[in-house]
Image (cartoon, rainbow, N blue to C red; front, side, top):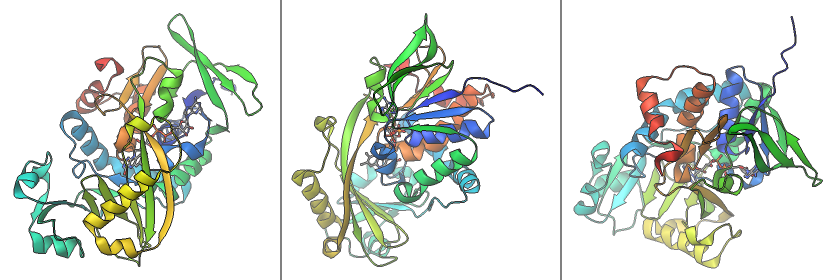
Length: 367
Ligand SMILES: Cc1cc2nc3c(=O)[nH]c(=O)nc-3n(C[C@H](O)[C@H](O)[C@H](O)COP(=O)(O)OP(=O)(O)OC[C@H]3O[C@@H](n4cnc5c(N)ncnc54)[C@H](O)[C@@H]3O)c2cc1C
């Protein structure tokens, strides 16, 4: 039997989307190489890991995409866990959204998907919730993944087990094309050497930085700061999603507190006093007692945002270069559907009418 010596498909960016798509393609028998500038800067390691199409109040095509992804999560995670032999911390724990008035509650975009809770019921779900919250919506179908500690590492391991090649510390500095056909990338290695890596196909997954190598993409960073506090196990059973602040309880009592939304910060790194005090005020407005708990960690990252806050999915204007970027604040939620739809498209596996329609709403040329 002859040796197949095809050039690997390149994944530009080894964050959440890069890993999810590399894993999907490797499962489908493709040779894949991931080019990653820095895994540490990936928003995949920053996110709170909520799977929250309903609690986030998504609307229209983005809600459909989010709901379709949510349905796929248990199978998607099962595959990653099987390939990696690691757990990802998927939990359908439900999310409670509290409101101050009936008017606010009933005008919430996803109102019809939730269970309305009166003040007593709300307190049963979220003990200690401050008095100003009079009622709530429980979205039992929403949940979480422990992306920061488990999912990202499990994805890396699953990719490795399926033969995906990684180049870490390598920056893509230019996309090469021949007429309008993708022809590889110029990469800068850790020694500063520039090489042309040839390939006929790639997926651009550079998150918030995507525009730096593909200038016409409408992507910009939205910085988010986070912190975590340590409580006793089972201190909260549901995620609490208040206006501008959320509390995500992990199984071991760690509570992730997020997140600021700072488009004006650009790529400015680091924590700020204003950002951190916004989070602490947020805790105070939801469950004041939690402000007594010890702080464990503080961190920040950059969401990849587009003008309509929906992702860019499918073939780009350069033939052979696919896009999977711009997932803004819902990338963890959307990773299951993104990897499946992009994986199928690249491998020419027919899409169902529903899948085809979902993809068509997120093409780059809608802007
Ligand atoms: C504070 C915060 C909270 C969030 N909470 C949630 C949540 O609860 N639920 C949810 O669904 N989503 C959440 N998100 C969103 C989610 O994290 C992102 O949508 C998702 O991680 C985007 O994945 P990505 O692969 O596109 O980008 P990233 O995960 O950021 O990965 C991009 C990678 O590309 C690499 N890269 C960039 N440029 C180059 C280059 N030129 N060459 C090589 N490599 C390059 C970077 O080093 C990086 O590793 C949150 C995000 C933030 C910041």
